Amino acid sequence: MLVQDDVMAKTQDKTTSGKSPYISPAELAVRWDCARSSVDRIARRERFTRICLGEGRNGMVRYDREEVYAYEASCRIVMQ
Image 1 (cartoon, one colour):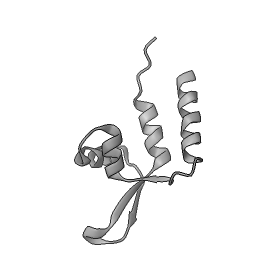
Image 2 (cartoon, rainbow, N blue to C red):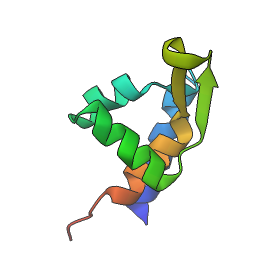
Image 3 (cartoon, rainbow, N blue to C red):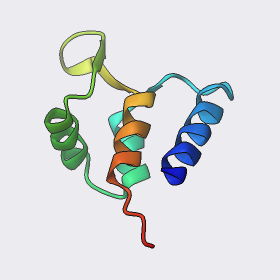
Image 4 (cartoon, helix red, strand yellow):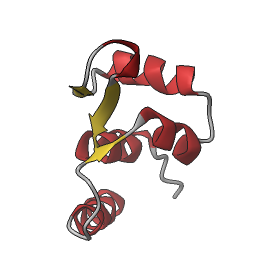
């Protein structure tokens, strides 16, 4: 439980440090070291909230940064 508290504290620090509350799929692909298609698949499976800016091919998709951090925290394995 201590590890989750640390993760939540770090999450709060990151969101209050002036960063946007949203994160792009391209940023997640770099952060997670995977393909953009993998980010899209994970986001659909985990039902991340999608923020769509614009329309059509030129539209942008963003995800809620807090949801992403919560997902990452839930995937961590704590070795004892």
